[in-house]
Image 1 (spheres, rainbow, N blue to C red):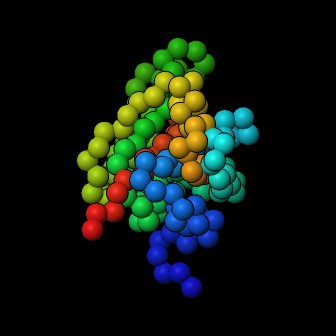
Image 2 (cartoon, rainbow, N blue to C red):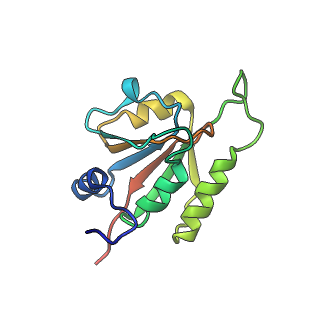
Length: 148
């Protein structure tokens, strides 16, 4: 029986095989996993129903298992039907969770189509589909180093 905060066997298996520089995608319920999945990424579906499991819950669990050296978000649109005039509120949640875990890095912003390209590279070891309903809630984490 596992005692840690992260107990999902498939996620733990992938994290155990990933290393420094490997990436983890946590994505919202609108993310096109079928057409944008990286060639080496393992897809884990945690999208049980709308709102379950959400991106912040996944982030909190992952931070107990691996060190993070960088975090990037999908830049929101400023024009069109899904335009925003400020950062999505979930970004504040991401920042707070990272800060609470001891991280001080800024969230890098990647333009939407470029984000899809980066999240579809061989560097992505794990893609996690969530039931997150908030838009632009996609987060790409880069695994850091465990120091001796």
